[in-house]
Image (spheres, rainbow, N blue to C red):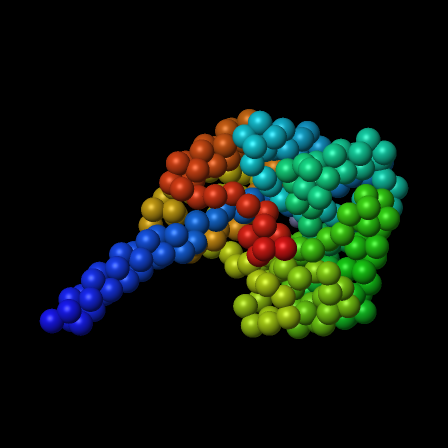
Length: 255
Ligand SMILES: [Zn+2]
């Protein structure tokens, strides 16, 4: 009789342990703020919208990510570079800086729309990535690990171009077939138009269906007016209340 009893106890013990383990194992819901279009040059300075969100991150003790358009660093502004260095997460700040292209250009050729990483030769794309990484490291001492293309436009050449820069191991809104890097997919939006955040539209999308465990939310904080900024902070407060944890891409991927 002792054997089955022992079995029962062990079974119960295991069940309790399983419940405890699964509670601990449930991954936190993670939100990453993907904020685009930072420039830091003499011609195109860091605009106030970025400083406002970085100050907000400091005040809330949270983190944000800012995408850099690197051509602006060809003639860097010393104060802006100091601002980047001070806020970089590698230096104890709260900002992950990521590569958002060299020039962010788009144009038309024979009626076909082309942009920096869509419809351009692989050499063009490779040079834009390598030049960006080199110049960013030269001016700031930091290394890019994350890429997100301008307009989120890419083509078949882009993965090949990225192979030239192995440090770029995380790809925001990249193609899910890519197995060389960690792809962080798109889910819902917080902007209803470029540079315009809507709390109401976000809530509608959020409540319409269950969300994935990681949301990478895009914004253009350099363009935000007071209402957009206020709606962004409202969304952030709501998500925190819902148990979403804010991370950088590197923190999320574990690098
Ligand atoms: Zn952009």
